[in-house]
Amino acid sequence: MIGPVAVFILVMILFKIAGLAVHRAVDVFYKYKTGDLRVMLWERLNHRVGAALGMLNAAIYILLISLVVYVVGYWTTQMATAESDPKPVRYFNR
Image (cartoon, rainbow, N blue to C red; front, side, top):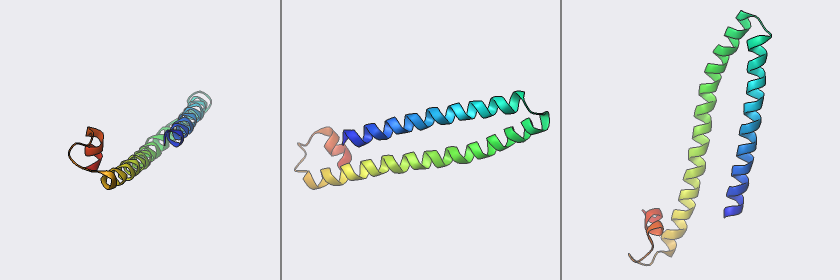
């Protein structure tokens, strides 16, 4: 179970770094190499699309975390024996 999680986190970090590099390059281009109108249009687009993509990103993270909790909780509920189970097992069973 640790392997897929580690690969997911690694790929996520790589995409975040690549996205930050591209965003900075585009931001520098619009800030220093275009006129004021283009800068204002870029900033408006950046704010509007950034908020929407941030919400989409948060929704995807919530779904992925919920999926992991659901799968682990389903498995531990089937394997539960009594109140003598460890605390993490009781937590996921709730």
